[in-house]
Image (cartoon, rainbow, N blue to C red; front, side, top):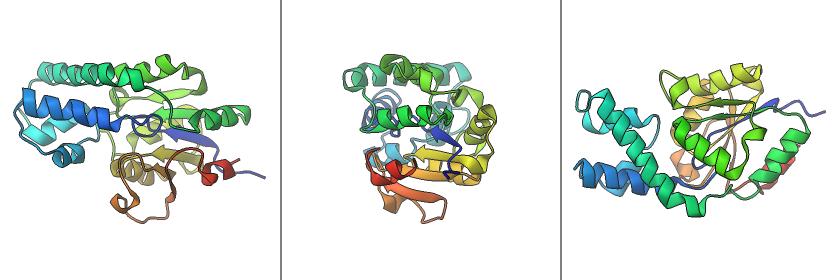
Length: 220
């Protein structure tokens, strides 16, 4: 009898859609062309976790921007990302089948993302997949973003499932760390990082390229 998982929690960007290169381009443009940070692509990539405001503080230090300024650059970055990515927007291969199977099995699902609601809505509504998710936790719903476990713990709470019964799908080392700190097992999508970027820990069950991987099929 299948006892695990009792619930599925998905990160969004790089996990449900393969869009991280578009985020990287948008951030590189904002940080270097607009804000004159003079960072390499790898340096920008290394900062791409957590809330947009947290990224700006990590790069420029506290006090560089007002809250209104950080909100402006956050939304401006997402506008540029969405405009560039919209023609390419699609679910990662095999994910639609997983969502359908989990819904058929009555396994509750949530999104636990550091994205702002603007970006989550962009994906859910354009792809018409909102119906699959009983809970959504965005950057606006937590005090501290990943690698803090709050995002995933709040998702589990909203699903009424113990953390140990939740399986997280993630693509980023900081996201996988957040899942581990929440007491959850993780499946890692290798869309932007390879397995060498992740510590070898027991909570990571598999590294997969997409959702057609045999490991995903074995869950059911």
